[in-house]
Image (tube, rainbow, N blue to C red; front, side):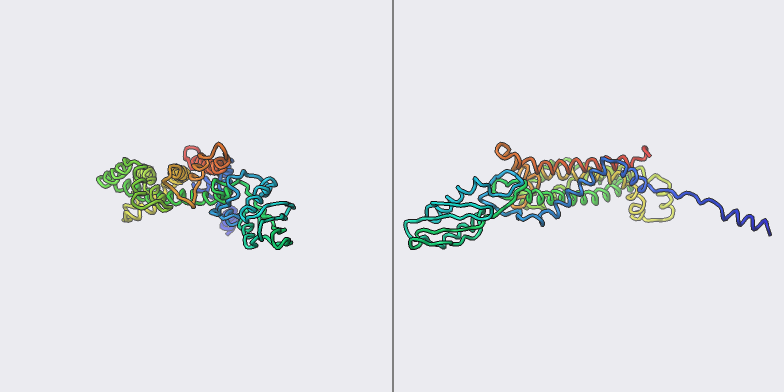
Length: 380
């Protein structure tokens, strides 16, 4: 009896075996220790948050044209500047068919005296409100049977932190809207490449034989088509729009993904667990879905993080050539092309979109490098 108790007591004090960690848990720990990758993820999150939420917080619509603020440089102080008001008042007086004889400017309003050879039509004071500098004007005093008017109008204070473009549109709002378009094209086209490329490559690699040969020859034929020629044909038949760029890029970028997945599949299908699944009668679709595709996700995830910046850069190149997104919608490529045309007189039009594009591309490449190191089986 005592022997049984001793055995029970000794069994109760057995040390539990340490729990193992999966590949993805290990990869996550390794990725967190990579400072460059973590910093890049933080930068990407900030850029994405700014592009998604920023236009809603901006006081300027992305397509609003400020005719009085064409190509004004960026600054923290509000517009209009003090030196901008006298010429603007002179132009308004000329439109009203009067002469500006006096003006007094405060921080929030301007008071002017207008004189005409005949009674001034007060309906023409609506030109003040139509200006980007002033609000609705009101008559403070009438003299000489309406030939002399003292008019007061509030000053509209506007901020252009990134300046304005050649059409007088706020560059900050347009840069954030352009980020939405570029990131959307990059993510959507990469998702299409992921779905088509993984399915095509896994099927070709697992089935092998003549099916593999035919499927990969189709890939080679599509590879042989010049990409720019393919895009021009799409533009001729369907016109220029956002969906066109998505279709054009997604229809080509899955080819590399298919080759990568096929190469991984050729090695995976000889593993014991795949042969065991075949012996148990699992269908071809089930083996590809449950065993082949999940075990190719390591290289696929790494390549996907490198494919997104490649697609963004490709879209920017197409927009730079005039084959991409069209006005009034914009993308980083469109803004960079416009900035390149105005680099001598307004270099900020090129600098700000280029900074956003460069930061995004560098961050995605650092994340890709971090994932590659984290998922590398030789470095664990």
